[in-house]
Image (cartoon, rainbow, N blue to C red; front, side, top):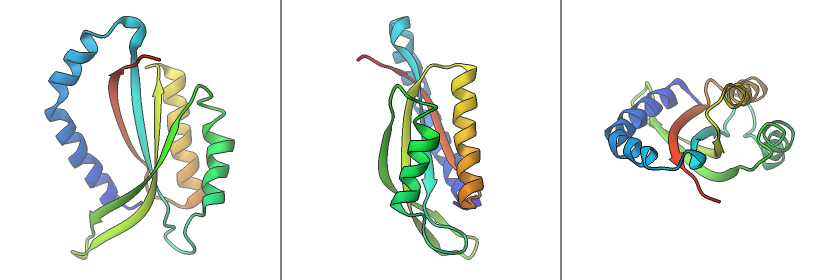
Length: 139
C-alpha cells in the first residue's frame, strides 16, 4: 500500500468520528463481559516491484503469523483499495481485510503491531491500514 492509503485511512477515521457518540453510547449500555475491541487491518496485495502477493503467500502469513497470535478466531475477506495518486490518477489495488475481535489489552496491541510490521517487511509494503472501534460482542 502506498502513502495515499494513509490519507484514505485518515478520511475514514474522520468519518468514523462522526458516529462516535452513538458507538460510545452502545458500548456504555453493553455488559462489561461483552465489551471488546474490533480491529480491522487492510493488507495490499501489490508489491512495489514484482509479482502480486499470491494466495499461498497470504495463507502462509495467516497460518504462521496471524493464527498463533489470535487463536480464538479471526475473519478474512477480500477487498479492493482505491486512492488518488500524486499524479492525479486513481490507483486501485486488490487487498485482504483481517477483522479481529479482542480485548483492549497490551498483549493484543503488541500482536496487532507485530502483524503490521511483519507484513510490511516481508512484502515490501509502505503501510497496513488499521481501524479500531469498541464493540459489544455476544457468542
